[in-house]
Amino acid sequence: MWQKFLQRIVKAIDPRLEKYREKKAEVKYTPKTLEEFIDVLRRTPKSVLSLSDRERIAAVMSFNERKVADLMVPKKEMVFVKDKEVLGPLVLDKLYKSGFTNFPVVDARNKVKGIIHTEALNALEIKKTDLAEKYVDKTVNYLHTQDSLKFAVEEIDRTNGYYFLVLDESEELAGFFTIQMLLAYLIG
Image 1 (cartoon, rainbow, N blue to C red):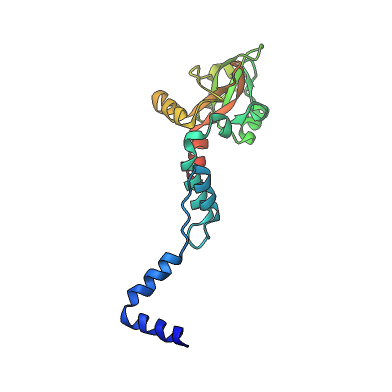
Image 2: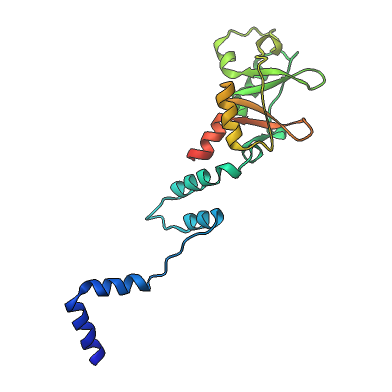
């Protein structure tokens, strides 16, 4: 009984004391590593941060550790065009249905000669006998699987490129990387 009476007196005399006691009793967690911080973000209630906001913050926070290989489309999923291939309806249909907008053009030994961009194909009137090599853009930009995303941004800026072929440690084609992939990673 006396305890309740004293608590009421303390509250009446100085309400700030009660607030201080409440704050002091709170246990605040401070993450000590990036992984812990990202974990806190992922556990934050949706009423505070939406799932997309949490993912966006986590993406930005882990940006420096991510590699081109983490975002690239692997070689096995790429669509190639042979330089001597006729750009007839079947080939064009295959290219458009792939969903990609750029296609590496390879010679008979599978060596990359350049890139065909679908926007170039859309703008031109292709005859049924035109070969792919007629529409090749010989400017090819490269990145490596172990390049950081920060380096990729620098290369995008330096080359003004938006499509990069990705090479592995053996200088073999491993996939491709685009500025759209980078933006999707950052923006969600």
